[in-house]
Amino acid sequence: MKKFLALSICTSLAALSLVACDPVREERGYRLDPEQIALVETGVSSKDDVIEKMGSPTSISTFPDAGEAWYYIGKKTEHIAFLEKDIIEQNVIVIHFDQNEVVKEIKKYDKDDRREIEVVERTTPTGGNKLGFFEQIFGNFGRFNTGQ
Image (cartoon, rainbow, N blue to C red; front, top):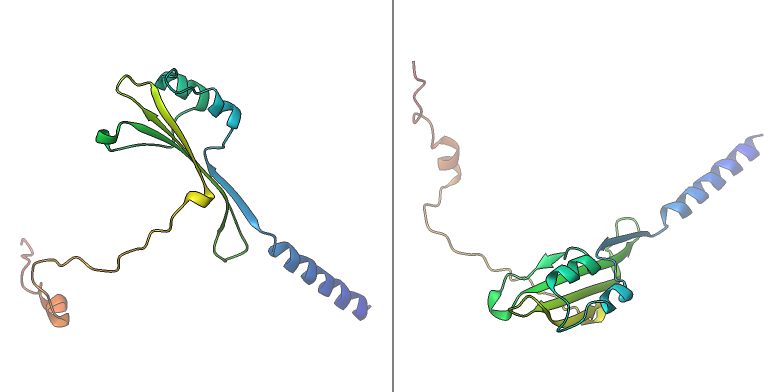
């Protein structure tokens, strides 16, 4: 009986550890459908047509000098437990409009077009007083009136 119990516990633990290693897949953002994108025509489709065929954009450009652009962004990732996420698929559709709100250009980007951004580690200097440890701890003693 003890051997059976030990064997069943070991089997359960092995099965549980295998299930825990199953990768977690996530899909976020716009789901790319080539048929919907093919319905949007440059020089013909308006903003209303794009919304009707593709839905609301994920983001809208904030640079008016370059002309208005709508972004449809989607990403599929996968990770195991606490490890870093791997990007399986990434798609960005950029639709540029002219001054008459008609589609001027459609660009498609995928995972291979992405670039890593290096973070600058500098700090911005700020003015003001630098307080020491004791000034921070005892600086407010006697500043407040109890109001009585």
